[in-house]
Length: 423
Image (cartoon, rainbow, N blue to C red; front, side):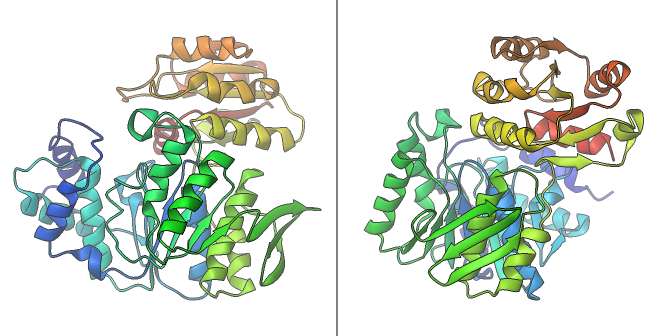
């Protein structure tokens, strides 16, 4: 019987002793063995940053597709199924196509060491090279300089969304060091769209762009995006756009939309494309309201939300979103990884939360135990208890506060589990 993609993906997990090992040698070797597919993919828009990469990519895709363009997109991690990572000319990759490409990459790689992300990225490049499209949107996996998406010599645009402290064990301890890794995607002469940055990060990005003669289009200097009377106002040297607010929830999405619009304008797109970017984008687990499925049916009067943010900037974004929602008793069901700044995530949320139910993330070896998440929440000033599962926590909340707002949050891995279980 032919193997499905799940079986091959499981085997790919064993090809390197580490999950993350940032270097370019292995991916360059495999791409060469595959005939360098990365050199024949449609024009690339390459996106790095700590927060907002996926939302910005989704908005750019919506804007380009509104004009009739076919768009490839690569993103990670996936939430419910691996296929979400590879979108071919607008459609998620099919199971037969994915299985065939993974097989081909396994054969070409032989017994050499390679990480899971590296070999699956090579499969994505193969898919993009063989399927006609107008654009390729590449989201960096981790960092930028040594990320295996960073093999495209001449992208059409690069984009750096807000940079903050995360993944210090791989990218450096300071904001400047981390920004330097993100700025590694900047290419000679290629325009770079820069989202809102802290001064230390912006200085590093601008210095790298100057060395490479890359034109910079930076938030606050070359473009601006802000909310005014329930509308999104975007302004650059070409004039002013008055647009609806993004359909993705949260005030931080205004600045993600700004980066997407700046990119579309740099590509010569019209106002209709910019409007489509903010009204037609969909990006799951970013303050996503859950309206159907078993969890919703189990607590029908609860307003159930899902968010995968997991670092201090993610906590601030969720807090800002909650602050603008109508007053309502708000409970969190939270599970986090043990590699994250849990306290930094919790502190901004404290003023907006009635109680937190801490859970361990099912099937995730790097989960923070529910007890540790509870303790971190209590240290941040949040009333917190543990629960055996998301469903158990939701049942407890619904029993005492049937009309509460409930946000499941803290990790994309937890969000993926919820989306799978909720159908």
